Structure formats: C-alpha cells, structure tokens
Amino acid sequence: MKPYTFETRKTIDVEIADRSVDFIKKRSKVGQPFFLYIPWTRPHFPNFTSADFEGKSRIGRYGDSVMELDRNTGRVLDALREAGIEDNTIVVFCSDNGPMRETVGIEDGGFAGPYRGELGDPTEGSIRTVGMIKWPGRMKPQTTYEMFSIMDFYPTLAKLAGATVPTDRPIDGVDQSDFLLGTRKAGARDNLLTFIGDKLVAIRWHQFRIYNYDVMPTGIGPARVGGMYATLTPLAGYSQIYNIELDPREEHNMTTRVGWMGMFVMPVIMRYKATLKDHPNPPAPSFTE
Image 1 (cartoon, rainbow, N blue to C red):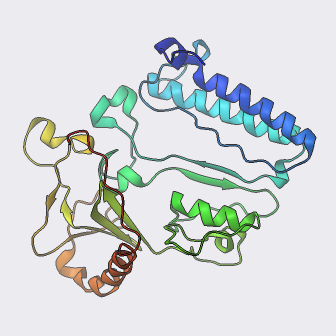
Image 2 (image 1 turned 135 degrees about the vertical axis):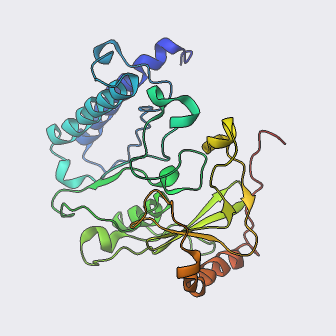
C-alpha cells in the first residue's frame, strides 16, 4: 500500500501491467482456470503518463495516455500467448462510460466520435463505449452493431464457464453466448434502460433512443455543457425519439413520425416496473442530499 499521489498516478498502470503479467505466468503453470480483472486507469482524467510516453503523441496528454494503454494491454496479451493459453482464454476489453470532454477539457476529456453527450448524460455518447471480445478458435472475428451491455457479461461468462445464475431474483443482463459463438446471428438484446440515479430517463430500442427527460442543453455557460453539469427536466406529454443510426448526433426529434413504437417500448418498461414490487431499487447516491 502507498499514497495515490500525482507521481503514483503516472506509473500506476505500469504497475498493474507488471502484476497482471506475473499473475498470468504463475497461474498458467498451475494449469487451473483463473479470472483476472484488470482495472486500467487510462485514459481517465488526469492523464499523467509514465516518462516513456510523455509527449509521444501529437494530441497531448490524452493521446499519450491512449498510447500507454495500448502498450500495457499488449503486454498482457503477449503474456497469454507466451504462456500457451491464448486459445483457451476469453479476453474482454471495454470501458464503463464515455468521455468527459466538456467537464475537464479537450486535453484530458476524450471524444465520443459522432455521438452526442458525455459522462453524466443518458445519451448515446455517454454510455456507448468501445467493446471487444476475443477467444481464438471459438469466436470468429467480426464487427457488429448488435446491442451488448456490460450487464450481459455476468450471465454470458457464467454460461461459457458452465456456471449458473440465480433464478430467485431479476437479472439485468442477458445471455449472449450463442451470439458470440456464432450459433445465433442476432444479439439477444433489443433494448436497454438508462437511469440517472433512480430515474428511468431513457430507453434504447433497436436503433432508436427514446428520452423521458429533456437532455438537450439550453441556456448559457455551464447550462450548455451537459454531462455532470446537466439538469434533467421531465418531458410533458411525449418523449423525444432519435434514430441514432440515421442521426447519430441526435439532432432531429422523430417523435411525430415514429410514435408507433410506443406499443413495443411500453411493455419493456412495464416488465421492468413489475420487478420492483419484490426487488425495489436501492436509493440513489446523491452528493446534494
């Protein structure tokens, strides 16, 4: 144990990589299955890298941080290969949220590509993140636009490992193992509920994003920023609906043209609400209460 200072921040991912590589070497020699969770800190603010990557990119600290993340991830993948267990190991690489571009600045905040929003929003740019899954010999290389939630890893990896999940409570994730193994062409998820605190603020259904709260930034100053600065206002009467494949920036509200989808989305919401009777959500944390 040691203090997590700015100096430690610069080298913490190198230390994580060192320990991960050592763990893989030791466990592979035993010949037993293992689970390794690697919580990289890159590229989260503040992006102070080790000396090897200071100024290595052309775009400042964020670029340097991504380059160092790439190197450290490569070290772990090399360790699997050198241990002779690459073909028998499932590797998942993903992020938990989108950028903080407006909140902390372009130098450290990242970029959501064509999508609107950032950390703290219920928008596509906030929760749509990089996701890669690798299992040589079992999963064929492909790129997909099917919906996959981090919550799905629990039942999916349990199935692949031959384990079971509890049946006496609602499980938010869905088993995506057949999709990953290629025995099912489409993903097992066609919707995703998005919360801020305990409020159901948005629903993703197929290629549509439906908002129950107004998330379009208005006003001046911080009110324009969104993200963690955003103020959510309940919508009266009708939701806002955007086709994120046709309109990834969510600039054109299509409610009057695609309002028919309510007959498909409402059952999803009602099924969720029915689970709250016996399994209510815990109170949401709040820094202001």
